[in-house]
Structure formats: structure tokens, C-alpha cells
Length: 206
Length: 105
Image (cartoon, each protein chain N blue to C red):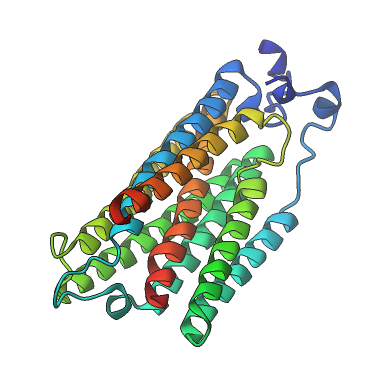
């Protein structure tokens, strides 16, 4: 694949796909996302089956959930998805500095989302909605917490990639990693769309 | 994967890349879809079945926007990506229906 390294030292068009390794990484990552879909699917299936099983005297979804905080979290995550798109666009233009800045914004928004989620869970536990309170609470924390863990992993992953790019620059090895991390971040947002729809909004409806 | 190879044409205009306008439009669309979903539930006076269907349609549209434009699934060379995700979705649907059926019927 040496034909793709240019004499002027510029990266080829779409550097993440310029090498066989890069293309394999992207393909492998899509198959991984297929597996992740199944993982989240099992948790959604469990939640949907158990969401009305609150037991006696325990808070129901309708009593518990506060939509404004969920709306803010949704807005933050959606915006972070857009900033990660901007980061990948900067990557395609070989603009390293703007790319790093957009990635930092993405990580910051991801951390903000996590902060909100921690606050939310803390609040729920105070309302008497612990992990073992009911089948509803267990399946709720497992599903939403699993998503939160993915956000936390993404924040750590992208932070490490920022550090690596600062040290090694943008090249045919680092570009596929950054592209794949972008895919991961969008996938997290896609899962959140289903969580706010199925868990929160449908929980409020009945 | 043949579609992933950069063509000569591609290399000639190699740093001519897509603008960000399309992504900003996707973002605004996603925001509007989210807003409709939240507003319908917060208003709280709409028929339950209708709300469920509306919520799922809003979620479906938003996921389509994100996957097609932001995850580049509309670009060429994404056949395996589509197969990978669709097989995941197929298993998920089977599982959700099975879990509900097993638990409650």
C-alpha cells in the first residue's frame, strides 16, 4: 500500500481506508457493533419484559423519571455526536489541530453526560429505587448503566487517542483508530436514542 | 470491499472533502425529532397507542439519520457494515419478542 503515501508528505484521501489494516479495522469494528447491538438488545428485552414489575410500595417509572434532565442529557449526547463528526471531517482535511479540539469538546460533553447520569442515579437511590429494589429497578440500572459504562469507556478511549495523536501525529496508523472511535461514539448515541425512547418516554406514558 | 479502494478520480481531487452543512442539517433534524418525542409525552394528553407508535417512528428516523450520514453508511463500500448491523438488529427483534412472549404468555 506504499502507493498511497504521497511524496509531499500529505495523507491520502480518507487515510483510514488507505491501508489494508485500516480497512480491516473498520470492517471488524462494524461486525463488533453488530455484536454490541445484540448485547444491548438482550438488556432491552429484559427491561421491556420486567418494566412493570415494581413490587409493592416501590417507585414506578412514571413517579421516578424527570424528563427535563433526560432531555438535557439527550441534547448533550446528540451535540457530542455532531462534534465527533466535525473531528472526523477535520481528519479528512488533515487539519490536526481542529480535529484535536473537536475531540476534546466531544470528550468534555461525554463527561458532562456521565455527570448527569451519576446525579440521576444518586437521586433515584435516595427516592428508594436501589439496584435490588424490584425487577424493574434491576433491569433499568443494568440497561442504562451498561450504556453509561460505554460512555465512560469512550471518554477514556478518545482521551488516550488524543494523547497518542499529539505524540505521533496524524498518519496511516492513527487515522483508522480515530475513525473507528468516531463510529463507536455515534453508536453510543444511537443506543441512547432507544434508551430515552423506550425507557424514559415510554415509561412516562404508561 | 472493492468499493473501499480509492479510485484514480478520488486521488486527483484527494483533499476535496464533504462540507459540514449536511451534518448540521442532520443535527437540526435529530433535534426536531427529539423535541417532537419529548413534547408529545410531556403534553401527556395523547392516546397511548398513538404515542408509542409516534415515539418509535421518531426514534427510527433519528437512528437512520445517524447511521446513514454520521456513520457514513450511505457511502459506498459499506455492504458488510450493513449486513453486520442488520444481522444484529434481526437477533435483537427476535430476542425482544421472545423475552416478552416467554415471560408473559
